[in-house]
Amino acid sequence: MQRIVVLTGAGISQESGLQTFRGTDGLWNHERIEDICTPQGFRRDPMRVDRFYNGLRAQLPGVHPNAAHLALADLERAGREGRWNGQVTVITQNIDDLHERAGSRNVIHMHGELLRLRCTSCHATPQWRTDCFPDTPCPACGQPTLRPDIVWFGEMPYHMDSIARYLAECDLFVAIGTSGVVYPAAGFVDSVAGHADTMLFNLEVPPGPSAFDQAIVGPATRTVPAWTRDLLEA
Ligand code: BV8
Image 1 (cartoon, protein in one colour):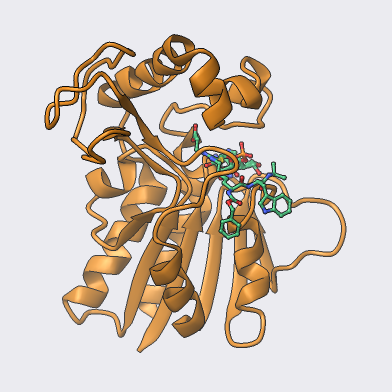
Image 2 (image 1 turned 90 degrees about the vertical axis):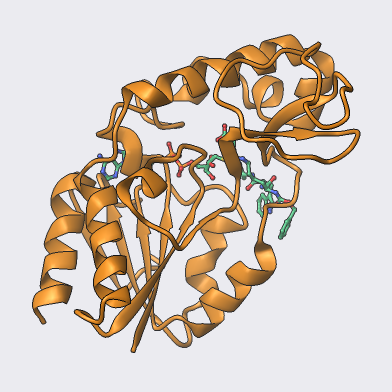
């Protein structure tokens, strides 16, 4: 049984029409991380942060999973149906729902989800598809204390215990469409070095020594389906 952990970043959703963070037209070119992606920024100007995530959330109905998302879902299904002797777990830094819409079931959102809010009074995490503003009442406790259910800088990523378990048990670690600059995600490849092979799928390969055994360069919608096809044919 092959155990594969796939770490995905904004690059896998780029060809679906969602901006990356650091690309030429990246999100961080238009907004300061300190203002939009920190608890301090939210305390300072919650309306601005809510508007930012309302904008990202409103984009989701207009975008669709691409061939890279679909290839990972197909590989997972082949394992479930016994057509392939393996298991895939997707650990995503992305807050969009394109992996699930592609059919992937083993998906861990380590940085949260756009389609979920969190109440800082009663800790409810309601599903949410529309806009949220600082005075929007929590559907569970009625308090106007909702925030995006997103992990901001300086906050502990979600599901770190199960992520550590999957990383410890995998025999192949694959990173797709991530720049590898944000931790702890950027450190996962080092944490599996002793027991798993490692592959990077990206548009460009960062300069200098790579932490990965293999790097496949190109758009994910081309490189990822080619890789899963080889796995299923092998
Ligand atoms: C924490 C949610 C304590 C919001 C995000 C160690 C050293 C230094 C610093 C730190 C450290 N440990 C912690 C820190 C601090 C900080 C950090 O890493 N800072 C960096 C900037 C130096 N980390 C934290 O604060 C984290 N919390 O550490 O808590 C702790 C400590 C230990 C253990 C547990 C907890 C929390 C970080 C999470 C912040 N929230 N997102 C939102 O989404 O709006 S981060 C956000 O940016 C993403 O989620 C992602 O994680 C990150 C990077 O983005 P990428 O997905 O990689 O996208 P990017 O645009 O950068 O790159 C896209 C890539 O795709 C490019 O390479 C491009 O070439 C490629 N590409 C583009 N198109 C395609 C493509 N590839 C293929 N096909 C294509 N078509």
